[in-house]
Image (cartoon, rainbow, N blue to C red):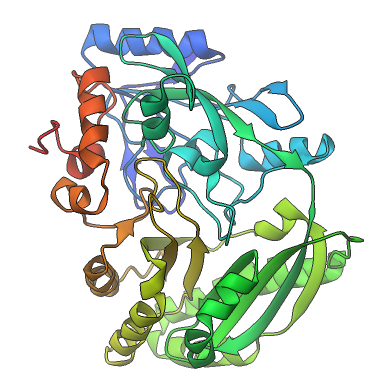
Length: 438
């Protein structure tokens, strides 16, 4: 196992840390040794993924584990695959495709490690299929005493339901068993619409499509709607030139230039939004599921996302539009809207309720705390739950009011990690330092 010292910086550049030591374990035993070493030396320990969280969830001043060598596929079955924690979702999906398998649903980013994505509650959009944690069948964890446990719905079910979205607070995940299915094609239909029309037709759109989402360009009526539904085929992917033009040139090169110009000359933001909304086109194609679910995002941004009860989505969006229209802000990034069925992982943002997600973004060079604060005030009015890996200001006092199993999670944390080996400043804020929240 290699050991070295280096500062940590996340993808967006808004979180940095200086661990006392960085290790790259090659197996679960190395992770257990590192946990015992941290405990013996009075240091804290965390495993980091690819740094795609906007919060400080992975920071530590003690031992930081980089899972670059924990990326093997351990076991493959017809309906389940066990993969090590550090495997990037991009590699995992390519390996599943090679074996004729697929995940039922995904988020739109594939650079995350499987563990980082699951532990922070990464989700996509789906009428019937939930987020990544809802597709987990078993977890292998190293606990604070250095022991290795495997939990599932049949084996220590409370730990399983807590640790699926465990925030790295209960132990270090070293392997995950996912439920998989035969690979399938998705028919993608992407086209422009107006926000007013979408607000009047949300029920039809969310119930009539397996995967539905849309992006709204603030200061305009313009939206881009995405409908993804399974198809028997044949595959009709975008041609390589069309894919390069849409995905790389328009969504990254051109959009990045627009954001940079807006940062330099703020008065251009609203006109650019209007031009972008007016230029939205139609894309219809069919391809392997993970290629439709995901996209490349190279323009760096900051993000806040809240999960609210699905029945309040239209009203919340109406209030957000009114707030943006009455402000002097210049918001260059679209607002993203997705949906999810209820699930049963204790700290999943979709726990126990049909959920809608509203995500706000700003260019990384032009943060707008007032914008995020205003939307946060609206969304918490509906009992909103913040995405664990995205910016928010909530603490344990608020979070225990919106998560029915929140105190159960903290009690389990007290039992498994009484010395707070796996904590950091972010976890202390959102979970408290004890089960009482103090």
